[in-house]
Structures are given as structure tokens and as C-alpha cells.
Amino acid sequence: MRKKNVASNRLVMRQGVCLLTMVVGIMACVTPYQPDAVSIGSSLVVEGQISDQPGPYAVKLTRTADYSYKSLNLLETGATVIISDNRGNQETLTEQSPGGTYQTKAAGIRGVAGRSYKLTIQTKAGKRYESSPEILPAVPPIDKLYYESNYTAAGGQTWSVLLDTKDPDTLGNYYKWNWTHYEFTEACQKTLVPLRSIYTGIGCCSDCWDITRCYNCISLNSDANINGKAISRQSIAEVPFTSLNRYYIEVEQQGISQGAYAFWKSIRQLTSNTGGLFDVAPSTVRGNIRGISNPGELVYGYFGAIGLSAGYLLIDRSTGKGSPKVDFPTVIPYPTRPPCIACENNLYRTPTKPRWWTY
View 1 (cartoon, helix red, strand yellow):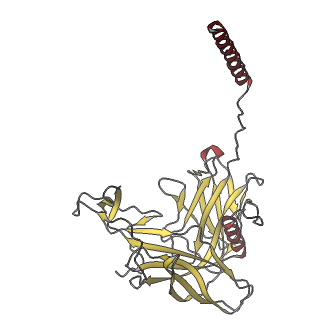
View 2 (cartoon, helix red, strand yellow; view 1 turned 30 degrees about the vertical axis):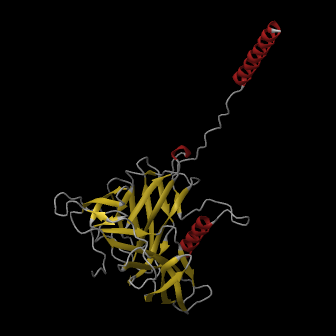
View 3 (cartoon, one colour; view 1 turned 135 degrees about the vertical axis):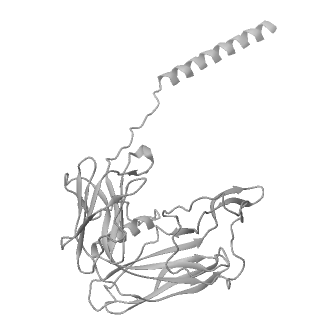
């Protein structure tokens, strides 16, 4: 009986070894699937505009990267960038540090309603690009900026910022609205301390404001159905209940061209798609920039000429229902200077006092 069990065990072992050998052999014969790398051609991306308000004006140049860079655009440095009008005026922009952004002088070229403007680019590699001429339209003033309180049990407390204006009698007016929120900050560097539920901060060496914008909030309108009538209750922004302090917001009303309106409308449609059954398929949104050296080259972005009127609003949040959704407090261990950190001047922070700041 014992001999029979031993023989049976040996048979099982031999079968196991054979099976393992077969599996290893099969695995050795399988070549792992290596998909081809997805690559797209490098294309220039242009962002910029000129307005009828004092400069400086900025033009940002980037280049689409290979797919392996995960949508990171590369700065286009060393280019020659010129803004010119139909009267023979022009200015060569100066590249800013760290590069890729080109800017006019504060007292340089300025947009005038009725004139047309064009952007010319020559890259460091010698490629030339040019925008289609854009006529700078006049824009009516903002008649009224105001806000209304909203409260729901599900969404909590917010405030809607609304705008009224009057469309001119002439047909063919197109509008775009932007907003910017400025908030005074004492800490130019913050570090979260999770166990204490606070931030420790280092103070700013000068007055400093944090900047908030909504880059996906594309608010547009045209006078196709309202020519010469009032534009009332145009939705601009939703203000969150994150503090009892007043909320400072600046609003720009832009008069744009028909081409710019079509461009931004396409961008809005593309960014608002949710993947539903009847959504428009993603597509390439072309702007008004073309390649001169290579007319068939894809170029993205838009250089616009805009008429601009602006205003500001202070939202009193002390009357909000419930409690604000506040962030952790910031503690600055060294309130006297130094040590301190210089307030940077960029898209998200500025040492320059907002133009209507009164407190």
C-alpha cells in the first residue's frame, strides 16, 4: 500500500513538472504587445490680444508637445513678435522671463476702435506666421453690475453676479465677458500641518493679492436676436461662501469680432461636452493664425482686437445663510520682517493694488 502511494505521488509530481514546463514554454512564446507610440506634429499655439485700453499687451507662444509629454505645451522662445495696424503703426514685443511670453511697452502701441490689427511672428527657427486682420470694435459701457443671493439646502449659500448693458442699434455686435477676483494675502508661502489643521506661513515683503479666474467660464452673447435692445441679467460668475469678508470682483465686457465669437463658441462647446450620446465629437478648433512659411501647417489659438469696458463689485457675504466653508487658518510664526518672501507678479498673484481696491 505504501509503495502504491509513493508511486502515485511520483506520478503527480511528474505531471506537475510537465505542466509547469508547458506553461513556461507557452509564456516564453508569447511576445508582449507593445502599442505604437502616439505622436502628433509640433504646432504653434498663440494666445494674445490688443484692446482700446492702455497696455501693456501680452502674447504667449507655446508649441504642442509629443503625446508622451501628456499634453504639456513647450514654450516658444526667441521669436520676433510684432503687432501692427492698418495705419502703419507697429511695435516689436519684448520677451519676458522665463520666456514664451512677449509684451508691449506700457506706453507703446494702443488699440483704437475702427482700426484693424495684425500679429506677425518669426520663430527662432525662421518660420513665419501671421494673423488675419482684426477690426477693433467699439463696446458699450456696463450699465449695471449687481449680485443676488442664492441659497439651497443641497448647494448651500452662493451669490450670482449679473450685468446689464445696452446693445447699439447697429447689427453685428458680439460680446465676451471675463471676471477676476482679487483677495489680499499676508502669507506668500504656506505649508499645511495636518495634525494641527493649520497652515504655517511666511509673510510677504509687500502688499500682495491672490488672483482667481475661471478659464473654463466662457460667457458669450451676440445681438442677432436683440439688436438695439438691452442685455439684462447676463450671468457673469458665482461667488462662493468661503468667508464673511467682502468679495472683490472685476468684470470686463469685451466687444469682439464675429471670427472671435465663432472661435470662443467652438471652444465653449468643446469644453462643455460631457460625453453624452448626442454630444459633438471632439474636433480641432482653428483660430485666425496661419503659417506663411508652410501654409499647410496647423496653427492654434487666436489673436484678437477688442473693445473693452470694465467695472467692479463688492459682494457683502456677512449676510449669508449658515456658516462659510472656510479653509484651515494660516499662522505666521514671524509676523515681523524679515524673514519674508517677495510677492510674485504672475497669473495667480500680484503686488499691484487692484484698480478699485478701497480696503
